[in-house]
Length: 445
Image (tube, rainbow, N blue to C red; front, side, top):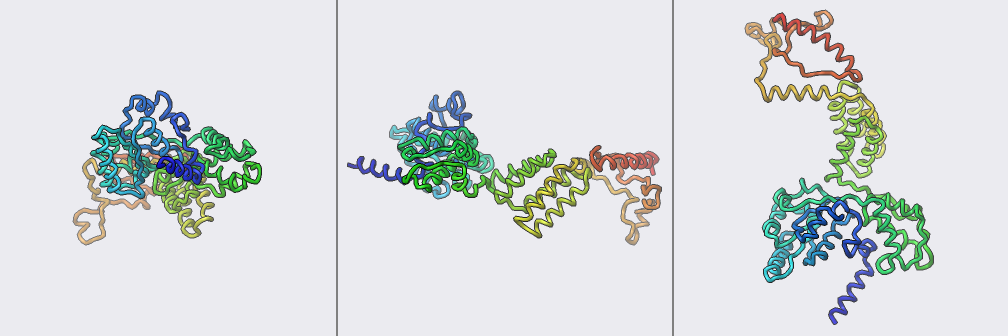
């Protein structure tokens, strides 16, 4: 009788479950994507064949199969499966599972596979509570995270686990899942008459950003909002677009996407690709990035990567920062686009950057150079008695505005202008200046 009730309950729960939940693969053979992990001959595949899984960390974007694969691993290995979320569970719940797992192993039962979702939400002490039982093999820990585990997970836990990175599903993977869901009569939408426009599937597979859950949810909304019980549903691109409304951009302003997109933006500008740069700018804006952060990065880049090859770049970046602060979103996207495309097209030089880095390295690693006496302050009483500023030559009185005197006290050159942009002119002028200054050093003046 209990089995009858359990079967009825499972049937009722499945009836109200969303399409994405109903279409979860039941075996590893049905699992879509991540062939670099579960494909024949790959490391995870070999560990399963040898039944030597050990604790692992699944790292990747949402909707790529982390939870699903954890369940399939437990089923494939005939392990007991327990699932907790670090968002809703604490150390108390984890310890209860660990005690249960230890008792089960001690009485000859199977090991427990503990799937801990959002493991990066646990603080250091909570993660440390897992260590003894993970190390003893009492539980097989499968931790899932959308954040880089090498930053978000304790190093001690990382050292006891293998990290597997999940990739967004390909458009082919998503298309296959969508077609399967449309055709499946038991778990999918196969009991309805659906006339599928191939362009609609192609559009949905592209716009969901490799997220299977989002793709299946959008498909379900599109079909069910068209009253499929009343007659055939024409699944068109327009119908999918209306179900999507405004696509949710995968972007965590405090996570990997924040740093990765910022890195891509800066590297694209440095690489003089305005098209790539403006795309990454748009990605950050669509994801809700703080425009002040973008402005700070642009101001830094203007000096770090352009410098004197185009001195106007710094003015453009600072002006963009001020304008953004003044007008705000959405209009400041125009200002930021102007700044980003200008900086990308500007000639590049990091000569000023390497100059200050080399000078600071000399100060940190070598003997401090005393200020030459003729350059010291000579305005206070007694300065002249010490010989300060006595032999200083006023540059504006010298020919060409350059006084031939030693300004450092040691023979070092830090700034090496490039032959790009305005810096080419500076390089020519600097060569003349340095020749004159070398003469002063050589004569001992």
